[in-house]
Image 1 (cartoon, one colour):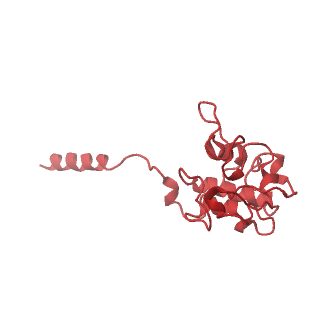
Image 2 (cartoon, one colour):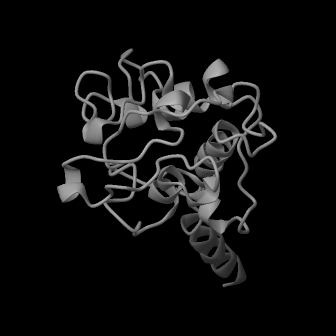
Image 3 (cartoon, one colour):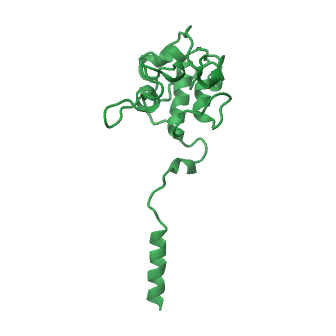
Length: 182
C-alpha cells in the first residue's frame, strides 16, 4: 500500500508542475524589473524585426509605421526623440481625446503621455499601448528611461543604445504636432 501512495503522490506532484510561468514578471516585486543594459529602445521595442524580416512592435504596418502612422506618430523613421520631445498631441484618433497632451514633456518627463500610455491600464485619454498586449515590466522600464533620457532628466540608464543612438540626446523640441499618442 505504501509504494502505491508514494507513486500517486509523485504522479500528482509531477502533474501539477508545468515547468514555467507564462508571465513570471508579474510575480516580481514592484520596481524589480529593470531595463537590461544596452537595450536600444527604438530598435528593440519600438521597431524590432520579426523572424520574417518585417518590422514589428509599435512600428508595425498596422500601427506607428512611417507610411501611415497611427495618430500621426511615426516610431520607425530616425529622429524619434526630436519628433516627440515637447510635441503636443493632436489628431482624429479617439476623436482627439489626447489633444493638447505633451508626448514627452521636457519639464516633467514622468507626466509625459508617452509614459502614461504604456504604464497605465486606463490612461487619461485614448487606449493603453500597445493595443495587443501590455509591454513587459522590463520594457516599460526601458521606455521610461528612454523618455527621461530624451527629456534630459536621466543618467542614460536605458543602456548604451537606450535612445536608439544619437536621437536620445536630442535637446531640441519639435514644433510639429503628432497624433494623439495612439
